[in-house]
Length: 185
Image (cartoon, rainbow, N blue to C red; front, top):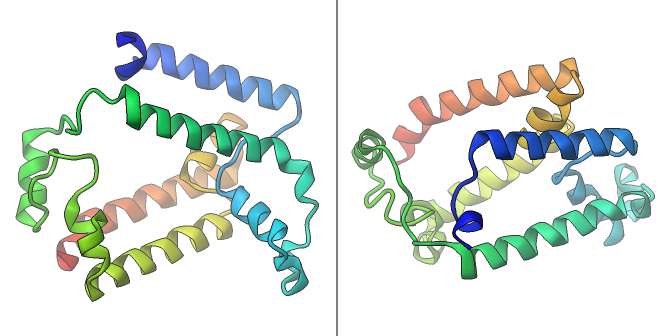
């Protein structure tokens, strides 16, 4: 059990990811989580109102199975395979986060200043999460995939749009981390 509850080394996780990408490529499938938003909207009948959602969602039903497996695996991991609630962060990162108002960084997986129920019930917390969710969802759809979809699948398929997207994600992340986040907190 110790083996599965610890972070896997790059030389184990990397080849496993590469094997999965190879199998998907071999079977003509494309991996993606954010594309399931489109599938869920199609299942819910959004195609009656917006042509974009008029798709045959059954073609991607295997991807729904993957999402269900991911949710199940995440639940199992958090309930029975997580050794502690702390995150092993670099002390400088903890200090940098404390400087912008995020206290107790590393004491839990998600900082309470952003992800707690108390924060969600404040106007500032609600607006931050709402805007962040809309931007992430819209950005993922506009870019034709999320960060992991472009970085793992797109780059492994040597797609130029994915390379451009990943560069944009990194630039956006740096701007958010160094310029915008300190202004919010």
